[in-house]
Image 1: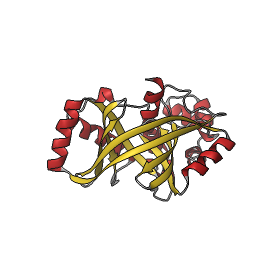
Image 2: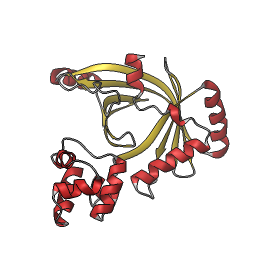
Image 3: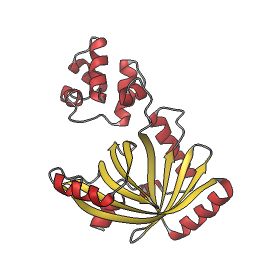
Image 4: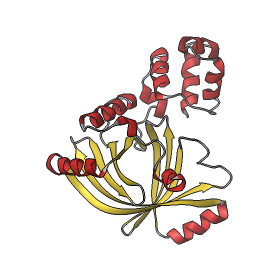
Length: 246
């Protein structure tokens, strides 16, 4: 059951028409229809309002009755070399070191459905090389605040490349980065990245969820400010976009 399906189910249980719900949200009934037909999805800010009107949690609207282990809340911010050095020293003193690794990610998209058509990219498909491990990963972003993420380890990248080629998936970018991971405040994974040709970045990801998604996202923004990061430099496009378009 999708977000739109759950909105439809709850709306009907309250005796609301699509127009009734639209009026309460100060939007058009066409937007409600689009959600319920799974053509589009409401933003997180809109989900907050919907949850209040339909008397449910945001978590239920997003992933139903069962907790989801494949929902990821994170932000990525472009930083300077000096900021990288300051953050690196801070993390060494105040966070738990996890690991340092070189990661090579090869990105793909279907020739019949371009991921790169929009200014803000919502979907990525990649094969990531992590030492001897190779992982197939798919992300689908919602409102640039959280994403559904699915991944599986693979044995043979070359054969998967051939399968992708037969199915009409084309390679669009290769991202080569050095990543240092830390666990901060026993809740956030902080990744300090140096990406070849792109420079320095920090990624903050929630690893322990204790609140609704919108609250966790807002807490990430607060943490970024506490770390003296410039929120104007939040990257909403992703490394492969910058590799391709510069």
